[in-house]
Length: 271
Ligand SMILES: [Zn+2]
Image 1 (tube, rainbow, N blue to C red):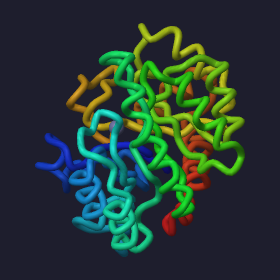
Image 2: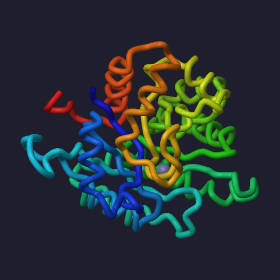
Image 3: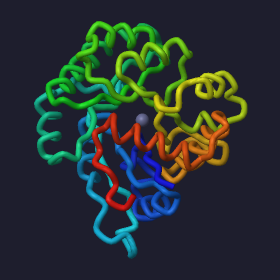
Image 4: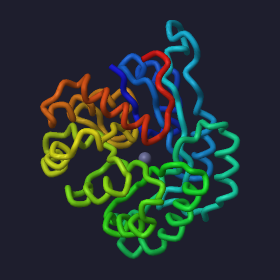
């Protein structure tokens, strides 16, 4: 099986303290690539530091690692101002290992009034992505209508990318797909009680979906929030396979091909 975890926070505990173990367990679960996503300038820098090619022969020791890539950007809850020059510097320093600008977006879950204040940073980073010809990794919570309107304003020339941990309606999904986006399927898909979102994910074309864990944050059926690792992307794959009535291998192959296309990742030399 060849899986890609398109969204995780490897620099956060408890993942950072056991990085080698986390990466080896991911590889053992069939994960061939991981995208580490920044939330502030400091964590974006750490994402770039972690991003590295899988090394040579995968037979021994640390070479059991998946390929690690980075996304840099400021989360809507970040309190610092966007510094496009600093983010551009990180993109340049990464020598091609930054594959997206993110996570950026809008979050109204702690008060709708916060969304307007988050909008300038979101727009500035959409521009940054376009300037660097990179896709975006969007975080959208209780603000999806506004996110879609802003992306529609940018039109077909917008950057495209991944709407991470998608939990919206089928209509919103269709609008986003039309704007060049694919939808990130996270651990929520594994939870039997998440009936509404499971129904939506089961009805969407598999070709518009990619897998993620948002590790360590989004819980699955077997792991509590805060205890998730990229290896659990396998559990997400199985859940999505069940929703689509497909073999997990087929879901892995399709979602991995989509992730490689949307993030412009080179083909896995081991595949
Ligand atoms: Zn995240």
